[in-house]
Image 1 (cartoon, rainbow, N blue to C red):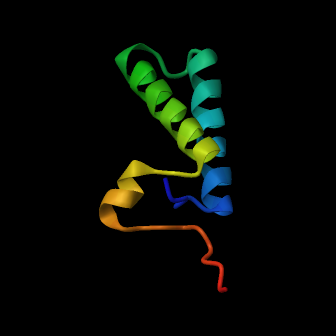
Image 2: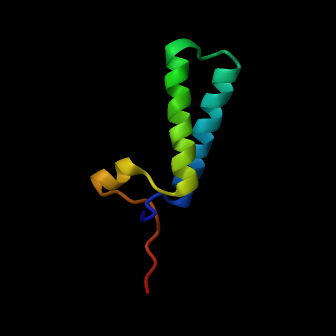
Length: 69
């Protein structure tokens, strides 16, 4: 897998996952919406840890800096 998630993108994804998790565990967001948001938060967290987003790969987007050799 070629990395396509940059550092700023990783920070934003982890921050969103943390906010969603906080809202879920504080019972602000509950029910089906809460579960869907927690799944998305998990996906954000995993994609930030592995530096690869399949949706970015499909649309040809990359937020990684390109190293010039």
